[in-house]
Length: 164
Image (cartoon, rainbow, N blue to C red; front, side, top):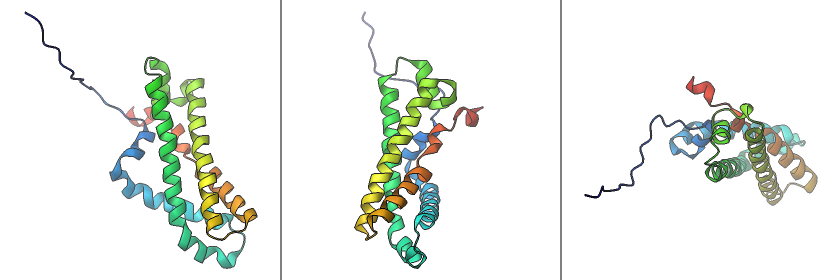
């Protein structure tokens, strides 16, 4: 008699890297206010003209915050794609997911993901700031501050610290 094959995959001890948590909607309750506050602070810091800081910030920070989330999603999607493409290399996948400081290649891949997110933040915020009426010099300065200071450096956090 022939055995019946089933396509059931069992998962034991499913552990997610911390950067994957951005894909879970319930975390937006915590992430949105935190990102909004950070974006508000950095935008205020980057604007030279004090007379426009408060009204400009109130009107446009939410757009910049959404752009930051889009950039974080793009960076985490890049990391997820790398994991899917290198599924056979358990050392690399484990390093990307749990301890990027344990493997040079994993560290470089995560730095690329952070840089990719920063580039998306820069060009997205530059577009938003120019459209909002800032001159080119101020828009570039603010977008650069936003890209450098709000890039998703949390991607480098060794998730193994949480699970130990």
